[in-house]
Image (cartoon, rainbow, N blue to C red; front, side):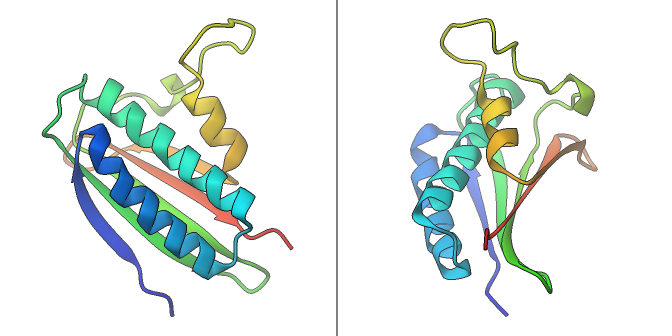
Length: 140
């Protein structure tokens, strides 16, 4: 059984490097290709940036819990990432990217996350904040 990593970071962009390093290590151990590893890191980076920007309104000392685990399914291994914030709760139906036809910088994080990961689930967390669960399986 592969070790599960749990970390608490502060809502500061400089804290994301530790999450990226841990993700890279775990995803490589699970057997993802280098392209998939890069994609997973990008998806998690986008999700954390959204927490900092939207969940915490840019406040930089708020906690974000990140859990990285291995999925051991009978068919294929995979990775599961949970991101828990303590910011404002929103209706998961309202978590959508802006229209792709609206060409301008920013606003594509949700599209990026959903295009990279196999499963994406946003839900209000008990006690406030949001819980994002992302899963991706190793491609054969």
